Image 1 (tube, rainbow, N blue to C red):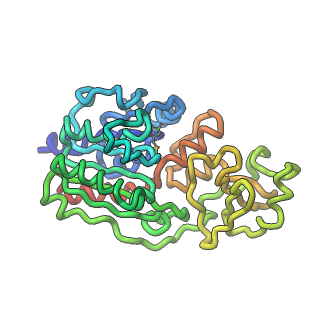
Image 2: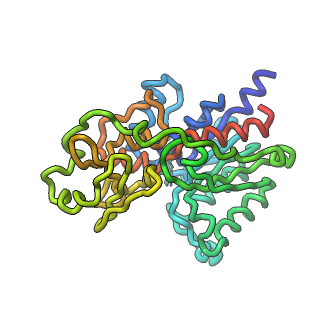
Image 3: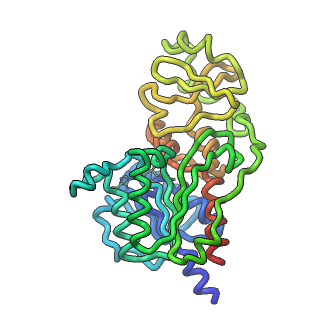
Length: 325
Ligand SMILES: C[S@@+](CC[C@H](N)C(=O)[O-])C[C@H]1O[C@@H](n2cnc3c(N)ncnc32)[C@H](O)[C@@H]1O
């Protein structure tokens, strides 16, 4: 009985990045038996934590998912995947050609679900997937999943409303079950009160000088607008955007590069960008999770691409309940 339950808790973690979804599921007793991504920098961060710090057996399997055969995976009951955000071209799909390596990655998920038929899955993506191509993209996703026999449900959840984390991050979560009974039992988590403030995520000491704008050309452009201590601002190439609700704006993959969406604060020592560690805090990564010594630009990308762990944790809990595990 116990062995069966354990088997039912096994999942494969596709587009695993640095393991955000894995962390949320494993907090509920699920076990990732296979994690895949094709980004070597993600592997550095992933293995540094799961293999070296947490002493787990699984390392990130580095390969283009399109090149991974469905029989490569050990037995699993659940599939998870925050597949890449670039919305795929339905027009292209309908015409019968695919945009290899970008848009058709969803169909790699379909291939694996078809071949291995796990009991359930969780997919995560940007909120815009819901409205993309007037809702046709999501409809196609539903059609494909339902054709395989899954009962599917989705919700857009904002981290600041569902994760008790001060980040304004809306994401779509798509959950499916092979069993109608389990699908009927599944409900998305309810809203919870936001008790944390940005100061729970910010480092309370002077960080490395490289993060401060003092004496740098951009300081002139920032100094008049960045003037409050309880706000995370965003530098958007030409202007400063203030987030009114005292939460951090959505952290994005490009926040570390070229002046896109850079999250900025004012502290005792001046105006600066958030450090990668602070960004990880705003996604709910636990303090034991360590960022390796790789380029900051890679860390910002990995963390922006990742998920809010407490939201995943709460969704995973509901999946576990619905499956009676
Ligand atoms: C939105 S991120 C998911 C991040 C993950 N949920 C996390 O918590 O870190 C998408 C990931 O898909 C990976 N990816 C994109 N194309 C891929 C492919 N063809 N094969 C494998 N991984 C791919 C990217 O490297 C990226 O890490």
